[in-house]
Length: 412
Image (tube, rainbow, N blue to C red):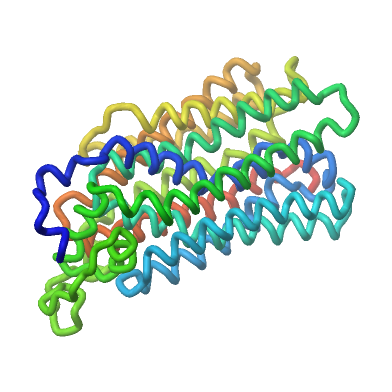
């Protein structure tokens, strides 16, 4: 490998802060489009009130992302990670652009046909997320923990940014004609920008950072085949290692099943974190928290509170493996807390609970994803990253289904 001639200790830190910034932008681009769809829920509720768009759009998204990540997790050792991530970011861009085209073509009218179109776009976002979130997590698990922390902070930042923009656009357009529609189109346009930026950053800048080349070269020397195309993009010609763990003649690499058994607590952590979060956010917060003095601003304030504290939680100093599962299970107490607060409490208590939901979600997510890959070789870290994202998305899917339980007794 050409890259081995450089000083490893120097290469392991050169470009680190630039890499952290790019990972943040790549995380932001990963979910900005779909978070925009969730954040403009007041526009979709106005257009498609009879169809429960907040819940249906989320539930439409989930099977596609779960099926896609399941296929990639099964075949992760042989997948071209570079092609996978570029395909995902490109599909994100095309999906956001399609949302603009659909709204222009229908002149912002409601009805069944436009709603089906919105659901198709949500499904496309799901396929794109299945490409990118697992691919990027597996890839960054090979590198320093700050990269994966920054990537998942970017994911949370996409929600915080869209919430802040939604509050601004609602205030700016509230009294204008087609104000909701103008705000929605602005969101879709900004989504296109961030997602196109992500394509360019991942394709042309990220693979050429010295620190990225160092970690990918290290992973290749340990037998990883998933980084070959990325190394070539960085100007490194990787020669196959005949004794690599991914060589069929070798059995040293832990299988996905063995990795799951060794990290079953982490997998359960990820599943429980997101089954709880998605059973409350965004459907319950948008539709089932009653009427308060904030009026039409109430749901937006709750969603913004969740997103901001989710982002803050991802920058809280991390903790070790011990006690994580206890902390995750204790979050289940939030379910009765939200139920009784929605029924008897005022909006201040609901905002506080929502903030804690976001803070704990972000903090525990980053704890698990930065701790779990430590001590494994490159191919195993990639596999474990994909596996944990599969558990995360499985929790999101089950949470989105359970979110419908809140409608029991409400006549739907």
